[in-house]
Image (cartoon, rainbow, N blue to C red):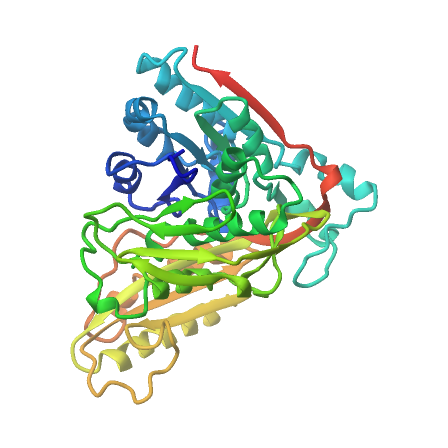
Length: 457
């Protein structure tokens, strides 16, 4: 904590697969008190669940462990504390791997690792349903019984308070399963400033701070629409840092000498990211009125955020449930030369026609011309000449055999389709599982987070 009572919380990862240099540069590029690393999204949880199904030792963000191994001496030497939801669906295995790295680094007795669990309610799901909790889909209102036999995971979005408990017990690194992205940044503020559970506006301010930095460089110039072409140094982007104060105001900034830009525009764009009702942004810790936030440019690469108002938290947790929703396969062909678009369309017509002749139809298909209409639909006016285009086709169906058959029909078009077809590589598209997302609610009093803290032996 600085002399004026503020703390500096740095974002090191915005998703699983983010820039591996970011946490290293955050730790070594200047003073910080906390490093928060956000790895999880619904699709990420699905990927991790598939991995754990194949190997019970997996199911967490494997990138996190070698990063921690690299950074442990700096973290200990600089007194930096880490909050990360890298544990995914197997936080215990992740924590054990980090402890093993620390032991090999000779840090026995010098580091404590906190573990937050209790978000996984899959073993209790049927019992809870038997007590009358239907886990109705928040989008469709259907009861979970319609897919219960295909459910593969059920994880509650925990909030900041279990992380706070781990920090208060001396954890240097806190590893969690499914907690909210915002909670990773809010927890250090609660711990450092002693905020109470009913100080709703302070909790809301910390939640807004977490929301701004949860996606990494997306608030420091990455994916920024305003003057994107004049944002400097994208080969060395600065990741965000929040300078938080006890009264609930904070400044968004980045390390000096790094690329990117922190501006009212870049921060505003991230504020709007994944926004539902801006007056009632619901988290486990509080409800936030995002329209109350005041943004002010306070100098180069510094944006001050103040005035955030909060409301009491609800009595429910959100639950992320995944279930087997069938199988899918996708494939690509590159079509080049004159009349590339027309040739690609003939390829698609031939593919679907041959499958129909063989008696195969699918619950869902996709046909896209990447470079022409895949992202935004038909372009008006269309480009006058297109000399190359990528045909992307795919299917989804509950019958795996039908999906596998689709994968065998793509390669023949190289020699039995129009001229100029190439780019087929990687073998036949194979059927892979589709995990559906089922959002639901569960009363908070039915979920008991567990916090364990272990010193490196």
